[in-house]
Length: 129
Image 1 (tube, helix red, strand yellow):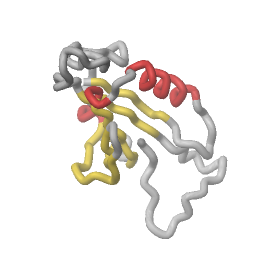
Image 2 (cartoon, helix red, strand yellow; image 1 turned 90 degrees about the vertical axis):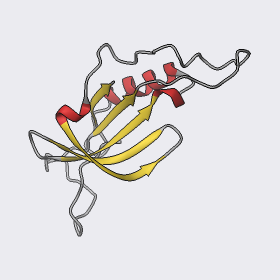
Image 3 (spheres, helix red, strand yellow; image 1 turned 45 degrees about the vertical axis):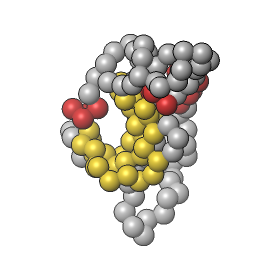
Image 4 (tube, helix red, strand yellow; image 1 turned 90 degrees about the horizontal axis):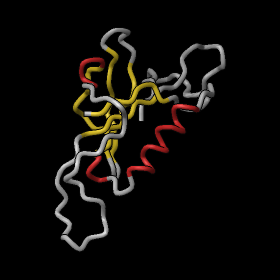
């Protein structure tokens, strides 16, 4: 989940004209072999699954702070800084090996890419490695 970092004391509420849209970046980490048995109905996680059309390194564009802001079942949220603009964001890294239905992840990314509203987080970039 990528969102600009606001200085302490500042309101999290934005005005439409402040030009500081909220941002979101989703990254996917490589799949790893599942330990599910041969009779499991879960997808075979040893097969590499592509979510996007290209592999890229998020660390080339963003400096990622190692400290976790939060975590969930699928991934971890950390602060990151755009190396070019020096803007701060939150980055959500999703481990593909934890996702049992890849189509759900693809649909979430597609929906977030369409959302354009001044008071809702904005998907900024998607990286897959």
